[in-house]
Length: 141
Image (cartoon, rainbow, N blue to C red; front, side, top):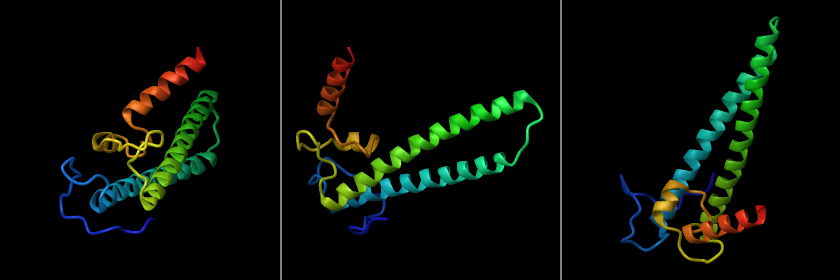
């Protein structure tokens, strides 16, 4: 858990009319990221508990066993995606501490507030992200 930056006014929402990544904006995104992280951890704990409970079940029907195996594979993939997302959230929280959050890793330009609202772990501006995706596609082809 990262340290609180400031008190946010009730109902605060970042605006393009204020200084980019001021204390209010940083605190707003810190809270948003920590809330998201807590939610993912709770879901992950619930999945782990469910998997442990199912592990004690013995299946007499091969179809039930196959379904359980498929479900397990799905849950494990889901848990791995959540683990990667939590790592990105932790990295974003560290960038908030370092005061580099909200700025594109490639260009140093601000990432739009709309993009950060939609994808709080974004590290690239839209332009840099699109270039990155084009470059990746060219590498595949």
